[in-house]
Length: 138
Image (cartoon, rainbow, N blue to C red):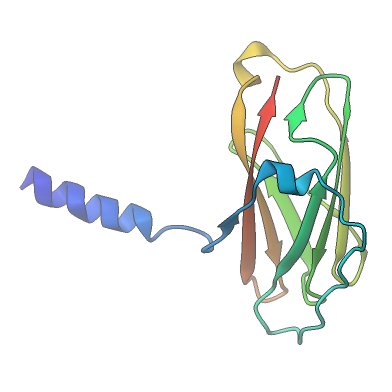
């Protein structure tokens, strides 16, 4: 009986993801493209898309500034940037263009570790596209 319950719980947990999402290589997000892609024009009800992600660094240290840019489809209403320890929204600069800038303050030792950063783009209907990037706070 316990084994069957474990299988059921594992199946339920596996189905509880926000989106399918995709993993990005940390080296690819710190390399700024020579030519930035343009936002993909999509109707408001179409599924949103993250097209490109750039960050100035994926290893964060106190006293440094962390910046990033996200290019998405034009129907993206918001981009949330989060881990299990923090969450904020990127500023919308135009249709499909988002950016953020955060000053990394002093971090207590318990939070100095590796995280999976989730970048979640949502349209006005609540549909989401997600990218994940490994980061570290040192």
